Length: 305
Ligand code: 0X9
Ligand code: ZN
Image 1 (cartoon, rainbow, N blue to C red):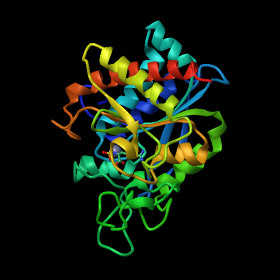
Image 2 (image 1 turned 180 degrees about the horizontal axis):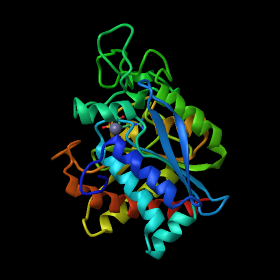
Image 3 (image 1 turned 90 degrees about the vertical axis):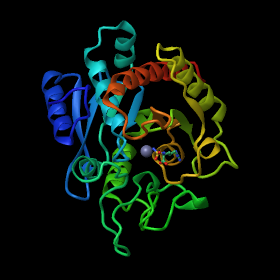
């Protein structure tokens, strides 16, 4: 059964979502992003205490093996609904939250049932025996440019036969596109490395026009997390600048094509000791850090012009 002392299956997460929707029928609303290649429904939860709040979109578990992301996303949902801490209440009630705990549903199920280290989607290739596309290279934003993705279907960063070839990513595009006027912030949850990555992913020769703001906001997240009891250190910079070129990723697409000016990839714990196989004892501490960091990030956003 569902909890944060262990990692949960997709069925457990969905049953818990149903329970939340039944318990908080006024504040929460379920939404359907779309249908995966294997026919699963991709579900999201909207939390809104009052209309007209700035919107924050959280995309989680686009990479199948990054289980800490959905564990953290569900913990945040629970805090936004149940916390009695006034700072958390203020955060929860002053934003409209759109949260997709598991975007890559097919891959996620595959990591539970067949291969714990699976990353990609599960759509077969027409030109290869290798299965799946890197969904975080499949958005139509500088797709396949500058060596930021592979054209080899067997590669872990295969960009796909064309942009939006993956139904999960097309669904994200349709849904986010339909609410983009309401969205101020896009956060894409990943693991691991403890990083906040801004646009751009496709080049380090150019930087976004609001890069100084993006770094100030990222610093606020990092400082808040480091000051928190565990002293966990996050580094920050542009994705191509401090990590590697990656084109067609969620936060770059949100920034470049949807005009969402505050847009990050967040790489959670750890820095490599356990990597993707992060022990469940890290779930709550990691999620606490995400809550502290997101609070600081959104507070800093309010001070920007
Ligand atoms: O390579 C990725 O997709 C992300 N790292 S991960 O280890 N979780 O796979 C980083 C993506 C950041 N790049 C851009 N935002 N472009
Ligand atoms: Zn990832």
